[in-house]
Amino acid sequence: MSAIVPYVAPWQTEFNQYSVQNYTPTNPFFNVLAMTIPSGQWWRIIYLLGVATTSAAVMTRTAFMQVTDATGRVTFKEIAPVSQPASSTYSYLYGPSLNAYANTTDPTAGQAVSVLPDLLLAPLSVVELALGNVDASDSWGNTGVFSIEVYTEDRESDTLQPIAAPLIP
Image: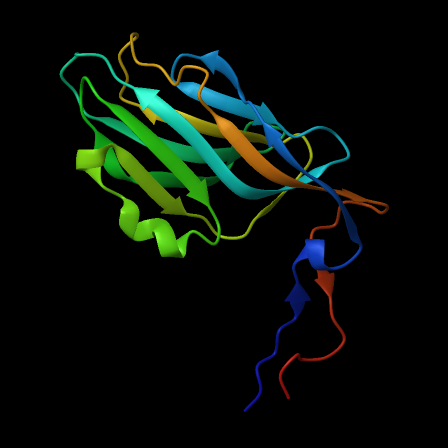
């Protein structure tokens, strides 16, 4: 029996990794941390970190990470594994290869870890950490760090390349 693997991830062929960058995301709204991927760049997330503080308003907040394409359509969304209560400060960490840390999600300690699939994000996409069900006094503050592998390409932006033969005979 053989496994046929018809595609490889685009950062494995024809892409050039040229840097690992740590960005401080902007805070366009009180409940969002965001970065827009520049034209000509493809991003692979290493990790996204944000610290959210909620007001005393009695409601439970839901944190999430999402990616929208250049048209504003949501292409990926990951909801945090815990809800955040009123009057609290939680640290949220999102990224691939965080399986070893997933068991450190602890609402009593105010931390949540979410494992993401290994994604390559297209130019002009927007990466966001956001809070849902918010009060106007809730805030991410200026506490975010987005650690990213940045790639460029010298070809059209087709997303997957076919390979000639199965990887496993």
